Length: 287
Image 1 (tube, rainbow, N blue to C red):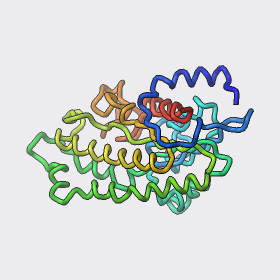
Image 2: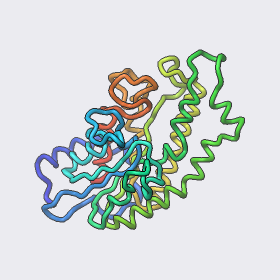
Image 3: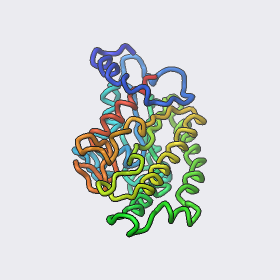
C-alpha cells in the first residue's frame, strides 16, 4: 500500500521512540492491508488501553476514551479502528461477557484483521489492590509496609503473576487463531513510581514504592516473554514513561497518581501518556 504524505509524516514522527520498542518474533514485515484499503486494526485489553475518564469518553460502560493509545496509533497509521478495550477487563473477558452484558472482546477479531494491540493482566493479578495496600499517609514508622506484609506472606502477588503467565500465552494463541493474518502488538504497563518513590507527593514509603514497581516490572517481564514465545511484538511503555511517572511534575506526568492532577483515573495514563504510548505502538506496528 503506497503511504500518503500525511501517513509518511506520521511515521517519521513516531520513529524517535523506536528505541523503546522490544520486538518479538512477529510475522515477517509490517502490519499491512490490501492495496488501497486502510489497515483493519482491532484493540483489545483493559483500562490501560481504554483510558478511563480521559476526555472524550466514547464508550461509557467501558470508560473508553477517544484519545486512548489505540486511537492515537490508528490515526498515525491511517487505520480503521475497532476498539473493544474495556476498563476492568481480565483475560476471561476476552472470551466471556464482561459485566454479563458486553460481547467477548475476541469477537472483534477476524481473518481480515491486519493489526491487533492489547494490554491485559493488571486486573488478573490485582495490581490496583496491591497499590492501594501500599498507601501510607503518615511517615515511617507510623503505618504498615506493604513490602514487609508481602514478604511475610510469601508475596502472593508475585506468585500470582508467575502463575498467570501461561494464561496470557494461551490468550495470544487464541488471538492468532482468530486473526491469523494480523501483526500482534502487546503494550506493557508503565513506570508508575520511580526508585524510592516521592513521599508525600505520592503517599507510598520508599521501600513500598520499590516493591510496587517491581511487581509491575515482573508483570511486564511476563508480557514480554510470552510475546516473544508466541510471535507477538512487545512495546516497553515503562521505558517510554521513565521520568514521567506519578512523581513527576503534574505537567510532565504520563501516569496520574492517587489524586489525579488532570482528567484521568487514578493510577492510569492521562492524555499525554496515551499520546506517547500510541506513538510507540504505531512505530512497533510498522517494524
